[in-house]
Length: 108
Image (cartoon, rainbow, N blue to C red; front, side, top):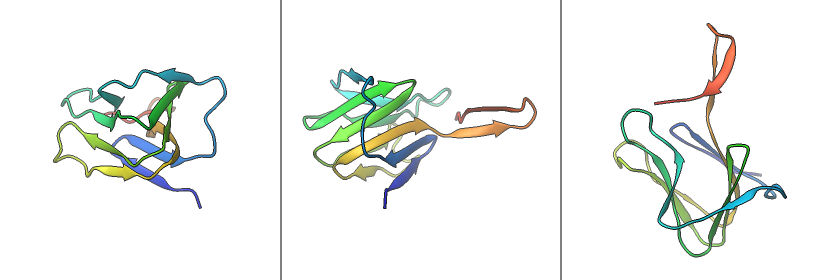
């Protein structure tokens, strides 16, 4: 059974593969998975050896050979999540606005 996590406005799904035309991202320092629009509480991923991240159409794909943490800059906002080695799809959570009749990314 595939695993699923939520971390604020970030959704994380275990997956089988990275899309073939996904672009590899440079992983120096930390990787911001979701910017905070107002508070500076970015959702971040540890960037370290054994961790590769790719992007396609605004969706991140993580391949980690070692456990890796997803955390918030403001640590009291959300618990830190540790992902076991696997392949993960990381996207922003979506919500439906019934006034505009549109789906959009969740924002803080």
